[in-house]
Length: 116
Image (tube, rainbow, N blue to C red):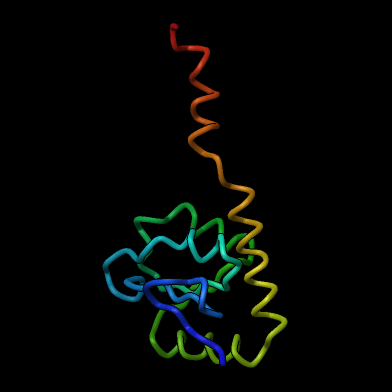
């Protein structure tokens, strides 16, 4: 049985749709799904996660749709293509891993400027 997760526990899903992204709400955080190697689908409203959504798209780690019809088509394609579903999920995990540690990187950059 394949599961699509919109909100909640992504670990039990096969595909993650980012809720709120088809409306003007800005969408939810997609990093949890990426960290769990889930193929991610989101709509056009990702203004509050603009940078990571662009990175996921650039890395072929997510699919962006513009309507409910496109969403259903993307879900159908992923459900019918196990290899594509796994490949996008693995790519999402790689993107997540390659971009983690932002707080540490910022601290290391400013540490020389901070007096002890």
